[in-house]
Length: 347
Image 1: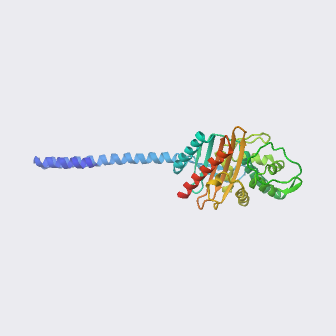
Image 2: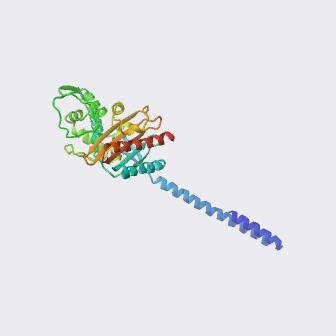
Image 3: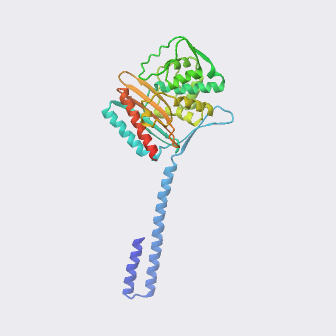
């Protein structure tokens, strides 16, 4: 547009210097004016087309809505997600990926996956999304949810007494252990749930498993659109994003009642595991979290999933790792946690 203004000034000077007729002068002014108008309209239309294209590209990332089936008149809301990862989390994703690559190059880490959900902005991002891991003790969270669902359907389940009269052949060598139930004692289901979640006790878990209705657990996986587990299988696999659905269901109170969701989160907040995500978060910040270890003597697996209640910006972080030793894996989880926490507190 500036070009046309300069051109018109040049020609006006030229015309008057040549003392041409007023007819030609007015003609030139009109032509210049129309040219300027059409050029301006053309530029504006192009800019509008760009804006429309950007809006269309943005709107193509639709929301995915998941609802519970099986009710005659209602479909309770489970999750609402943007199909696309959050743009605001891209720099953080790059930073975390760089950390993982450094650990792979120098710390004996084989691979790692991350899922992050920012509850305040409803944004998410994931790294190494397709990689699957053995959950280990992470599987105790769906067992917890299944028991609470059983209690909703048949009140009194949590107050049932279960006798621990013989040791179980767990067949696992655990690196992180805490309190355990004692042979010859009876425990209420709610007590066993605490041992299973807060202390990650495999004996309490085995006793609970022996009294769990498998159809309730299967329905949980079906409702969350996850692969139905074979209850007799020795292994089951999750991606970090898939596993996070259990923690999200608890936080959203979208699968259990509000009271039972609060009960589950309170148990998770008592977890005694401090060698992962907790290392990157201030001790004063409350967390609801569960860790899991799996793998072989050659390749260890260490994972953790945590809801971090940071002021009015809570978030869910799930980190799943494989590598040669638990020390480097826990260090990696802690470093990823620290980066996420600092990013959240800075914004």
